[in-house]
Image (cartoon, rainbow over all chains, first blue to last red; front, side):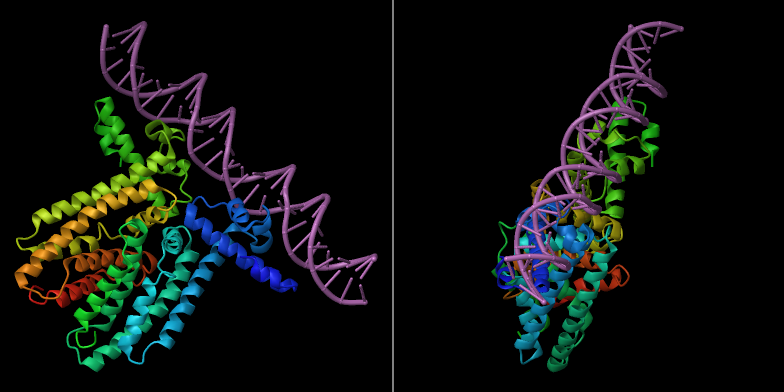
Length: 208
Length: 208
DNA sequence: AAAATGAATGAATAGTCATTCATTTTCTGG
DNA sequence: CCAGAAAATGAATGACTATTCATTCATTTT
């Protein structure tokens, strides 16, 4: 965990590494205790550092939490873009790959989802959280809508609306994440993926 | 707001009314401030009562929050059952009515959803919340699965799985709620309902 | 009307936690 | 190796808040 810090002998790099380390500790704490009862003491202990360390590197708890959310959002964004780039060539393949991404263990694991829901749960209290979630999500929705449009054009599907489909797909994964959070015992990654594929098959029968 | 209390002529009724009043104040506070920064002082002030009142009626903050979640869950359950009963006669009608319920303003409004997400966000920290959510949800899922089975049998649909459809439908509404929470400005109840109907149409084309 | 009961109050308490800062440790350039 | 700078520490501070409880208030019973 401190590998990065250990390999750096340069101060600004070390500073960056500490921030990273603290953000990771924050994620771990929130996933264990929830946002409401994660204290700066918890985070410092999880990182193996001293009480005052968070304020030294992040000024305030608020700021730490904001940066943590941004980190998660950037992490997802980069996975999303990489997936989009590597998959294909057709729109149908790309769309499926994106849906699969959302259910991959690295994205859809109980710990990480607990953190996302923690932030979502505070959206009403922290407009900054809402703003950030909104901005990132908007981008994904647009991509999914365009892919759907392409598929609709390719297949000459009638009577269906790309916006609706994009809405359903993004809602679907968010909803599946909730099940994973609420009923981890019964949660079945494979079944969830089958549900998503079933949906794709029913709207785009010529493609899936 | 104190109408119930005002009509009391016996003490136990008044006691029940106070609990109710405090639970409603809690919901209001959580929807405004989020779970993390709702204090007992806030709740008391929102209810127009004194500092110590919550502990008098609920023993502890934990207990108040648990009872609040139970209240919300019971409220939804009763709407669900009433909807199931009044709609019909066919399974397809019942299913649609249940989906419509989830998007009705009384169920799907920003304030109430903020409270649900607040509780979901704390699930990792509070196993009691998870347990409660789990128990209630399981019942709804079963109903939806059975309705889907009926529809599948009626329509002699091939190659589709009632469990998958039930998963998709419940995930779908939860995901749509998240959009309503995160992007209330762009949230369009009618569009959301169209998305759900679009899905039903694509899996059960003979029925919708 | 007096006494009794229980609801409600709100000030006091005890504990928690974010933040600060004086001090110590570690690093770097000369 | 040293002086100065940056990083890190952790005890102290002050704000906040759940909970308690002695007291007050309102209603019911005798």
